[in-house]
Image (cartoon, rainbow, N blue to C red; front, side):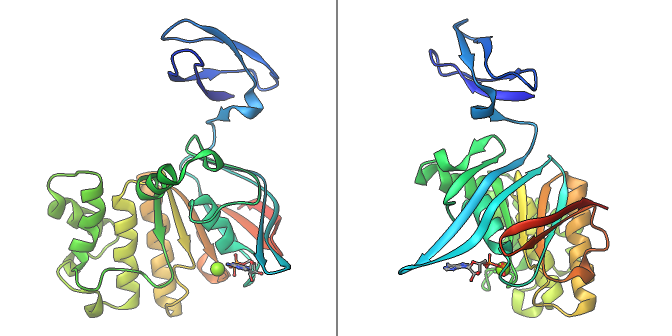
Amino acid sequence: MRVKTKCPNCTDVFIVEVPDDAEEYTVSCPRCEKIFNIRPPSDIATSFMIEMKNVTKIYRSGETKVYGLRDVNLSVKKGEFIVVVGPSGCGKSTLLNLIGGIDVLTEGRIIVDGEDLSKLKDKELTSFRRYKVGFVFQFFNLISTLTAVENVELSLKLRNVKRTREEAIRYLEIVGISKLGDRFPSELSGGEQQRVAIARALAKKPSILLADEPTGNLDTKSSEKVAYTLYNSAKNMGTTTILVTHDLGITKFAERIVTLRDGRIVDDRKI
Ligand code: ADP
Ligand code: MG
């Protein structure tokens, strides 16, 4: 198991290979040579891009408690594309919002790209969302006063890319709509708008891509096309992706399907 650890002396962060069953392991800091012990389960393992450990989310409205998730364990490898399905209200959005740092868990731990989300301060959580997470939502959320290309350019500016227009067109090519780059969202079909949103999310080069019912507002034909575009482009770019949907019809390409019911994972299978 690869464990990311921080030297208590010089605060250098480095990765060490530790036997899987080790409870305590002695390491030497490569920078200051300080020798210290680490406890792997409580340090951060980096073999997965996403790790949820015994995650429970309780919403409270007055005296009543509503469970969003109950004791969820889920690990997603780097570059993996998983589909999460289940009926309305089973906790799909809760799962994505916790992983994406939009919401905060009640119990457990979530580690994304080596960051333990519960340990991040507000400011760190904001930059985690800004730089590491790409979101695709049901209602596209494009900026209506900007063209398709300009919407994608926003993500590129965030990464200080220089020739943003050319790069944005390249991302629109990946999702198959580079010819429509100068149109405003209102001049595009729903499916086309969602492809712009996918290009915009990928242009951030995020560690993880989270898509919450991205086809929920589309007809059957565009749904299949958009879901497949999402799958294909994420796979090509090696972006770890979670696609959440209640529509099993769009999951033909799925390699791994996780099923939620009443806030619990009831099935997790490789296809
Ligand atoms: P899904 O996305 O699968 O439809 P959600 O994650 O939105 O499900 O919701 C899971 C459960 O948590 C539901 O019972 C829902 O009513 C509840 N829930 C979600 N968000 C809130 C909230 N902000 N306040 C109270 N209850 C919530
Ligand atoms: Mg939802």
